[in-house]
Amino acid sequence: MSEIKHNTHAAGTQGGFDLHKTVVLVGMMGAGKTAVGRALAARLGVPFLDSDAEIESAANMTIPEIFQRDGEPFFRAKETQVIGRLLDEQKGILSTGGGAFLSEGNRDMITERGASVWLRADLDVLWNRVRHKDTRPLLRTDDPYATLKALYEARVPIYAEADLTVASDGETSIDNMVDRVVDALLARPDVLERN
Image 1 (cartoon, rainbow, N blue to C red):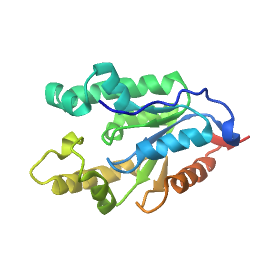
Image 2 (tube, helix red, strand yellow):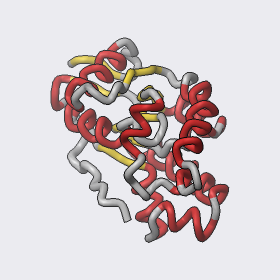
Image 3 (cartoon, helix red, strand yellow):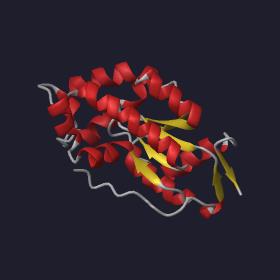
């Protein structure tokens, strides 16, 4: 099971910001959605949520176990339900699994109720981050690099539909990544403003 713990401090004006909509971080596995999301939530003084962790908690199983037992279509249906619930519950930072944004229904729901931010990382950066982990069910293939490359090429045009894009280059510190995301969000006063 995931070791992700959610920030539970109340949304407010900590850090001098007012968040008007939930920010949904999207992108490939290894793009930094969880690490950047957790730090961004702390910076803004809002809750951090992770859709994969919520699914694991509800199922009392890991995502690889859910994929193995119930298959990807079942997982994707649960993912949509969880994202909808998290968007409705409270404003905060929501990290999603790499495949969540591929669903047109999810993209529409996120745009209507929140704002999507694509953490765009190059294939080599992603590979360096995920190649030693066995927690990625989609990469349990004979040639995980080729699988990641195929996923990357198929998904990038869809991620490009996100409301905002922030480069994740693999060399920038998490604090500086948070600065980049905050700067991008401040260009959208309907999402984030200084107070």
